[in-house]
Length: 215
Image 1: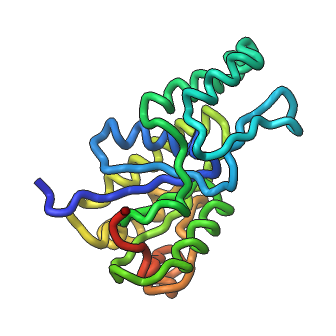
Image 2: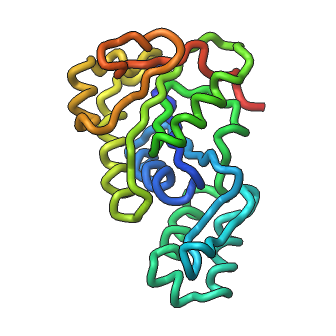
């Protein structure tokens, strides 16, 4: 058994589609994974673009599912939202907000640049406790069901490149290999801490990164 399995967090805005699809696939592949959102509320498509369904992060997937069935079962069946929520509630009880989690991770993968910025802002604001680096990688994924599935497999492929038991997983990938895995268009953003001066700003590790174990 590896001394230190890779601890992965996947983060999107509402912890509904992109991060949960990746959570689903990574957990089936045996990864130690959690998923999160960074928004202030959970938003799901509504009957019109300017009429989203908005929930608190404390609302369970089951409650969201039942609420949408009550509002318009046919609509939310056709657009795939009920299917998505049914999958989500089989994985965990409710969406979680990244800013509320103090667990330590080796690798945090975000699904869009705005979410990446919010993750870095939160990590940089935390009190230094463990002085353990965390790698934060952004993989831009459009927020629809098809792209979420494709993005989840790309994230899984990236995680499979990182050797288990290594405290510095991304360094083990190698710069050229990581470029290939991210298909050139997706990148790890440059930021504060060691690695920010790497070629192309590609390899970035935030150090120190996370607080200690969760309460």
